[in-house]
Amino acid sequence: MNLVVDLGNTQTKVGIFTGKELIKKFVFDKNSSSEIKKLLNEFSEIKYSMVSSVINHSKEIINILQNKTFCIDFDIHTRLFFKILYKTPETLGKDRIAAVAGAIALYPKKPLLVLDAGTCIKYNFITSNGEFIGGAISPGIDMRFKALNVFTDRLPHLQLEENYTKIIGSSTKTSIISGVQLGTLFEVEGFIKKFKEQNKDGIVVATGGNLSFLADGLKNSIFAAPDLILSGLNEILLYHHKN
Image (tube, rainbow, N blue to C red; front, side, top):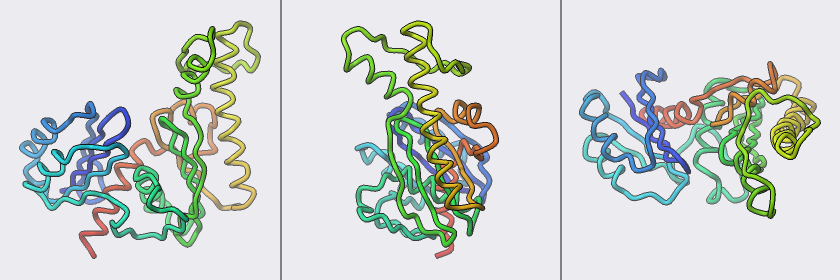
């Protein structure tokens, strides 16, 4: 049994796997060491673990897991089952690497566009040979709403409205919502269109906190994988079991 930990900007996500199957998922606040201890006591079968972080974190969780399991602190030196051709791999986010790992495991030998719609929107491109060649990063939905408020004197700080579809706003509020939400969808659609033009058999896999918004807005053009990063970390951990 494996345990993987994804330390994000706002939350800590934990997955417990038997083989490739996610059997339990937990979401905690960033300071989650006490919850990790409880899980290790509850699931005594856990033998292997991995921690991935996009923030500067203390080693407390690593130390807890190393005392109970064979634990890997995921970093640039961690062995992978695919190639990274990024020119600055030392700056590549671990969440992006994990999402790519999860997508390749789902669709091996396929050109992939992996979308992660969270604090930022990450676009990751993978060749059919399993090579991560790069991508793009843009502000996420919440960041766009916040920027309009912070960098102006009078615009309010709004939040996502899932079912809003009007392109023409009839008030300042609806104009902001249209600009941010539909603007985001148009951006994503543009990346998908370009990817599909260059890869006729390409597959788009999406994950992240705003996944439901993308899935509703983009309909059948993406494959939704809400636990892609956890699954990707587990795939990397399984690879280490075998190698």
